[in-house]
Image 1 (tube, rainbow, N blue to C red):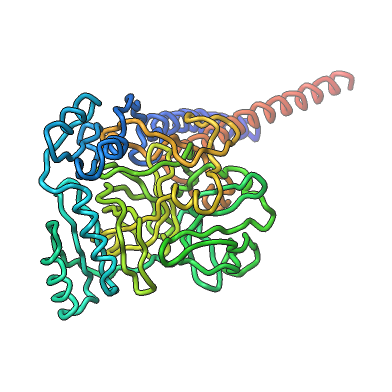
Image 2: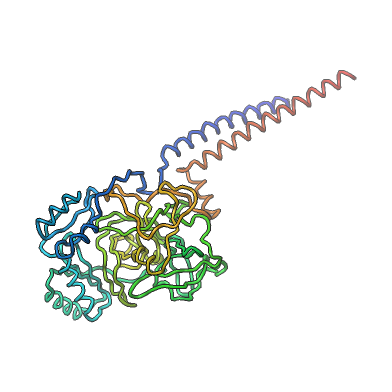
Length: 455
């Protein structure tokens, strides 16, 4: 009777193990079939050979014959020109010309007048190349009297000025990809950089003055380093020197959350119309379009010039975080208005300007495909022409130092292959166990009969 019960138990166990193998195999197959190849929006898109950059054409033709440049819907540069001769040169260079009334020199002259005027906190201005005008924005903190004075000033400028009221307030986003904390508040690691001897974190200058001590945890148990250089206001960048002098493994990777990341292969300057991506510890990964460059913003703490304006959302806690596209580092989060529920405007400190001013180089991947090892990138890397809608963050890479809780949550996620693999492993163990138990029982029965025959 006991033998029959054991045989039934073994059969039931074997059937359950076989069922587990089938179920686990099905789960793994579905996870593999549905898993995206990279981070959101990171589907591989071949980069086409670029026509000469629009900025290069503007520099060659001059500010009196051009009105700026931007990236068109097809990924090709568009250059605003003021005469037919300049338009012909732009066409010969492989770009698209657009004839406009006002030159870049006229538009820049208007922004110079605005910069020289008494500062009004809560205002920002930029040249809109596509509209061929200067945009002057004021947030909700600007009084009616100040708005009237700004309007009078704009009316007296020699170039067209579009006045806009914005929702929210222009503030620095104190409090990114990996959070860093100090007594000044919470900020974000932007990109890892090096001077050839030691490694540093490049982050926002408003995060804290020189001498600020930064930690990786809120209890102050793991010191990351100290701020050793920076500029704010005027600019918005700073250097945090690692305590041990080294950034460690994965220094060329930007964290996207969930253990995923993007390899950074170089640094460059963004173009108007370009699709870009920002990562932050508060709001995660978001994307948008560059609306203007060389922007001036009057924060309550002071004015910052030379910024990049985008429609990518950001929230407090994202400050100092990285802006990038196609694996190219573009900027670090400075400030803005709005949030990721309703959208808004976010400003970024250009990476290339910060690298040059600080005398450091980006720690970047040795190859665009994510080759092993790291190399120091040159301050500026030319980018291929990619249609804005086809742009991606860059090549995917794992993020080192993933916490155990994160790993467990990923294994438990039915969208991943982890649960299926665990079921398959458990089923194989069960099959092996039943086979071992049966063999042991057969050996015991044989020994019993063998010894009995010698009775």
